[in-house]
Amino acid sequence: MLIRKPADIRPSEITSRENYLNRRKFIQSTALAGSSLIAGTAAGSIVPEERRARLTGVETSEFSTSEAPNSYTDITTYNNYYEFGTNKDDPFRNSQEFEPRPWSITVSGHADKTGTFNLEDIVKPHVLQERIYRLRCVEAWSMVIPWVGIPLADVIKQFAPQSAAKYVVFRTLNDRARMPGQRSRVLRWPYIEALTIAEAANPLPILAVGLYGEVLPNQNGAPIRLIVPWKYGFKSIKGIVSIDFSETRPRTSWEIAAPHEYGFYANVNPNVDHPRWSQARERRIGSAPQGALQSIFGAKKQPTLMFNGYGEQVAHLYDGLDLRRNF
Ligand code: MTE
Image (cartoon, rainbow, N blue to C red; front, side, top):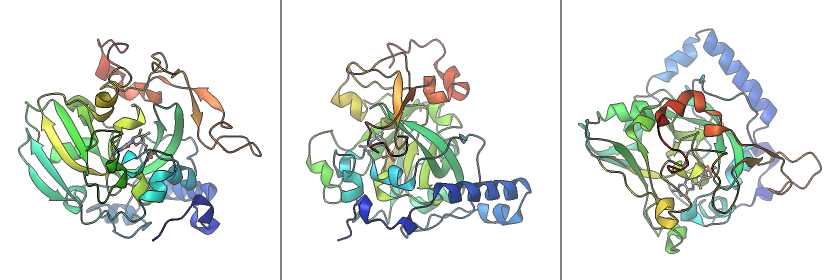
């Protein structure tokens, strides 16, 4: 059984942040020069099955933040994925044996193209992009994560939704044998999340299949998960097996669990507190000064930005909506 604690990971396995940023600069400059290497490999994106395999043909994105990403270790050992346990290191420890292949996604509801599709067939028509996004968890911590994925809007188009489709509903795999955390009743399974069709058509959300230029680790939602950077992290559902184009709004997992605490919209909003804590500030994981205790308590707090700093791209989606009531 392959269960390794963070301390067991050899330093050589951890991508140095400096190397990573240098490599990005190189990729960016070759992309700007119109490199045929990148253009040539972009058509027909593949997601290799091997753990930590490098993804090829990855383009950069104008939507990436220039903030320094968190370390690979932070991003892959401090997780929320209740299907593998509720402690922050449980997903890393308990998901190592999970086999994310073969994987298919069932598409249903108000769309011209429905049915069950292999992961490969969903990803193939699209160009992989790196999107370095801030992730703000409802628990008032944050990270900066270099995801690799495909724009959700393009995937939605692929299925040709009809005008009756008002919401896009996602569900996670429901399989107690493979996801030991589902033996607990901490949430109602399967995990379910949804976006309005307008939110899903916005250019920011992606379906991520990788991070740090490599195949997505199990604890981060392999083989495919949603990323919605202006919403609290719980909207970014992992291990997706179904996409439903629905006329009605479903009750999502955290709404079902605690409706007074977690709403459908879940837009990051420093002006609307969680009933039990403030949302005005956040701890950036791993940002403790050198020598300080590298725990969540040691990390510096910084102000939380409206829509997690993505207001320019998304504020218009909520024109006329009372964000205090629609939290
Ligand atoms: N998806 C599923 N299926 N189950 C979960 O428990 N947790 C959510 C979200 N997606 C969760 C999930 C929460 S609360 C957060 S903050 C993010 O995943 C964390 O993503 P990360 O571990 O990759 O940083």
